[in-house]
Image 1 (cartoon, rainbow, N blue to C red):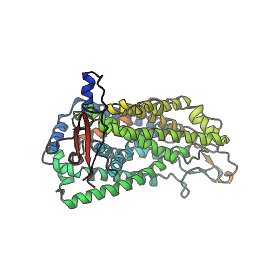
Image 2 (tube, rainbow, N blue to C red):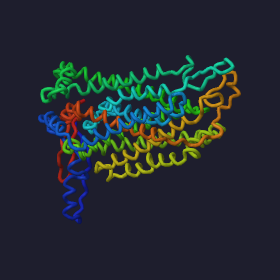
Image 3 (cartoon, rainbow, N blue to C red):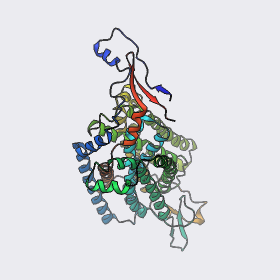
Image 4 (cartoon, rainbow, N blue to C red):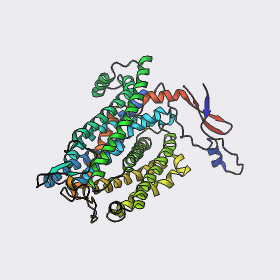
Length: 502
């Protein structure tokens, strides 16, 4: 087996004081950069920490439950007061759903992608990413009211001719809810399968250390796992296949969501950049969410000696790349429409960027680029472990503003009448499809705010329940990593030595 060093030797400086000399004993990195767990006692240790339940997790559970109840109240009152006849009343609900979907749908993909690239630093993050799969079940429930609010593709005109609206669907002129719901259910099933297959060895190892409902659950889900060579081979191949399938499905479902609930709802909006843009921000938001949870576990959750700084240091580079890619797609969207200068393109730019939503646009830009970018390029911030989570906070806030600016604005852009969303097929070539005059910004009412908070709360609640039921760390991966990694010293430098198993 070959080995390689993952650090640089320090440079000598005899003029430094004793404090700096002590720092040199660890090279460029502190003693908490790499954490190699004790493999034999890891399973019992993590199960004991899970039972301890630090105060931060109780706060997360109760806050999530309270916000979820608030969201349910807001939804019921919104449905009672506004009904579903006018889609414009549900723009902020759709924005809240899309925000939750964006943050949680791509999180399991991070575990699959970094496992495929054999990144050792991802081992403490893998189970965190996979537990987000449980939120995908809730996404199905949140998706149903959004489907009900989505206007039909075709409605009958008073003249007897059927009016239509622009859409990616070109067969049945009805609400394409069946296909959309099928895509969401398939995505949820695939993500839960990834979670089950990845957690199978950990549940089997832990089933004799837990009691009550968890013991029964582990026995049913992992009763047939004995850790044979064939079972490990099947698990490895299954995770690779499911990961590839999930990648294809998540990109496709995100294309459906952003096309049907955003682009198709603004007359004249035809943009090939928006679907990949939405996928990029989903990757960005998913990784940001993982880093926030990992930092909370390390800082307040009692896992400081199991989660080092290396996962944040390495993931910050990926987050920086996704932040730059986000900004590039934003610029590409702007420059295409600005350079085209068609009347409809100018109207869309004015509506989404420079007139109606100019305030929220600039706030979003600051939160997703101008603030996190200098944090992520700072070596000190990234190396100390707090830089990436701090940038992630601003990114998540910015993505919430992005969803309000895109989805809530799209639903409020035009009424479901002729000359708004709809037009007669006989007028297809003369129909201008312009967003003129440019409508003003729409603002949330109290029930909308409740639903947005409820979307955040249900993620906290479901994720906390997942951490209560399942091992919060990928035990088999961390035990495997402890066999492939060793921290060693050479002269005054501290190095991570990696062995290559394949």
